[in-house]
Image 1 (cartoon, rainbow, N blue to C red):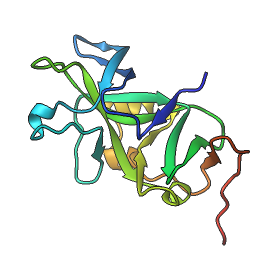
Image 2: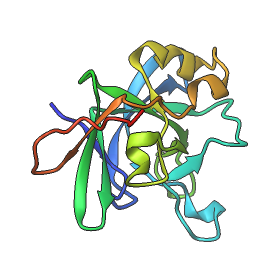
Image 3: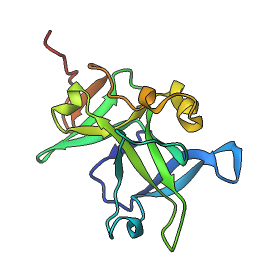
Length: 170
């Protein structure tokens, strides 16, 4: 079953995230969380994304499962999938419930790779399945995991159109 992540979905959408259980660090759990930070700490605004550059993420790490993410160019929408067809995770951070605000999460972003940069400047940091424990347990440096993917890793398809693999001119 497809699990698209729509970066233009309204904040407040709920979806499953994967994290270490804060009550039992030996357990990895999947819980439902709301997309967007607590506005109480950002002058009344809620944010769904956080830039990777210049940040450290020592705790509250999570993963957002996805089979694709959606980008827009004007009124057109595009589905972005890995060229292997595998699902992946977006790197994220979660915030505990506080002052009436539920468990929530934000997606960590990196500069868009070549294919996606044709549609937008940034996208969620991709965590491959083999990197899951490195991200959750912080056993690899953030700058090794939160990187712009190489060219030709994505297939971009206009929603409602046939798949087209973007090729770089050499």
